[in-house]
Every structure is written in C-alpha cells, then in structure tokens.
Image (cartoon, rainbow, N blue to C red; front, side, top):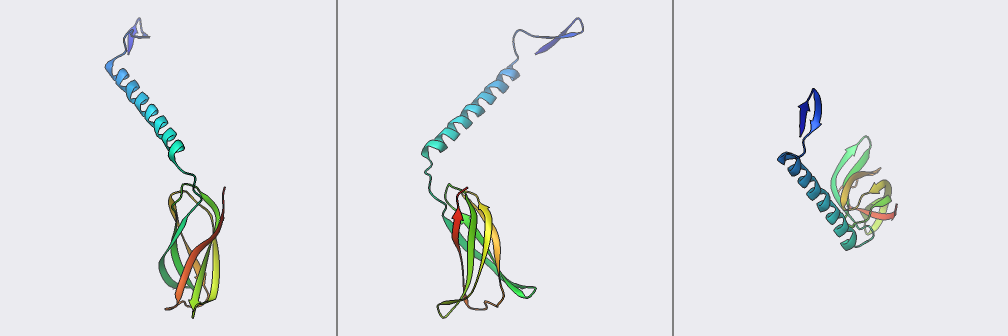
Length: 136
C-alpha cells in the first residue's frame, strides 16, 4: 500500500489484504498450470493422426457439384499436408476422383472443406476419405 509523506509516495511496511489475496491467487494459478502441463506431458500418448471424415452437404455450384465435409483429427498429434480424396462410385468402381489438400489439421480438432466434381453424383455413392499426411 502506498502512503503519501511530504508529497512523495512511500510504501507501507505491511501489505494490505488485497495484495496478499492477489498474490495468493496468482501463485495458485501458476502452480495449477504447471501441474496441468506436466500431467499432460507425462500421461498423453503420442499416437499418430487419426481422421474421421463426415459428408455434410451436396449442392450444384457454377457447373460443378460440391460435396462439403468435415474432417476430424482425434489423435493428440497434428498433421500437415493432409490429402483428402473424393470419389463417385458406380457399380463398385470409381468413375470420378478429386483431391483436396489441407495445410494442416490440428490435434484433437476438426476442419471443414469441400471437393468439386464435374459430374452429378446424384444418388451414386460418394466416398470422401483422408489418403495421406505429413507430420510437422
């Protein structure tokens, strides 16, 4: 606490209760974060990226057919240059394939994207899956 003596600020010998409370709260937060980061570092397994792709929509756009999707990385490791392939399947064969690349898909998160087909998938089966990645 600051006192004014002879028009100059002077620190009091005994800090006030609010200074003690603020210091204690800050110390608890710092110690808690250190414990949490240490716990995560020691217990988290280092699994390679694992992807789940879910188609979220289909629509025609300017002469192409867009198939929107979400890609989720459920592992604790980030992946970069994630290649996703979309295929239109007729009679068990791929009649059109397209590919899109994500710069990265962070660990335990998801991203959204779309593939553009030149032909109408209509009622045909559409497969969208991750086909490759690199580790940053």
